[in-house]
Image 1 (cartoon, rainbow, N blue to C red):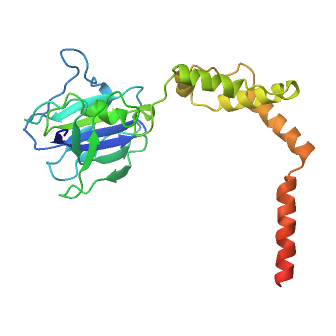
Image 2: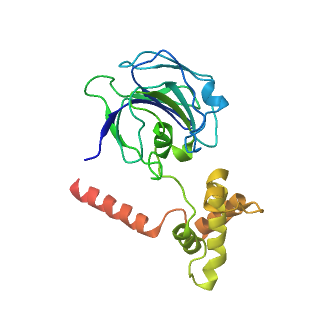
Image 3: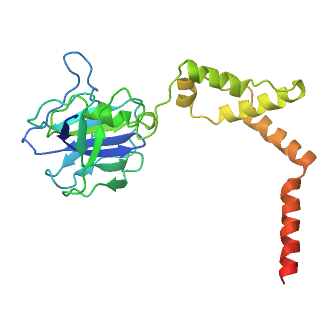
Length: 249
């Protein structure tokens, strides 16, 4: 059976803060890296955040929004006296979630005997990777904080491996009939242009040099003109509903 280690956490999403709250030891300690360099580093943005409060109660978190970063930053607010946690441990956490863009509190656990959540520490897993990066290298009983960017918060981490490449090749260049390939490529280019630049970079994609969004709008307008503003199936369905309504009346 895997050990269950008690640490409590606070988190800010969308470039978010994740913290872990426990018995204060009276000294705030910042750890930028471990001797092997495997710990998440601190940074100017997370060090600008103010934390107050005692273990067992919701922390008081103060910062000037918005905060923006490209990778998770970590800060040890108070160091616990337990053993260091490692990948595979189950962490019992209390948490608060703040929006780092607006400063608004999103959610808090109850900070009572029923509120802690169990989180499996795994810095290699795509889900909750920012929280794991924040908790890693901590000792049991620590209060830690993490400022987490969108791609590392509570959503799966985007990857650019061979499976993703294969899927993208199929989605961007499917085996369509010759006459439909150009319109499809225009639609693909329009969709790619709406992606966040960091998402495109992560997936190995590039924004078209030409005004793809405008051209896509024109193409969709032409399709609507040719096919009509309402699909035939929907039109027939609405006619049938109208007939049924009259029969009932």
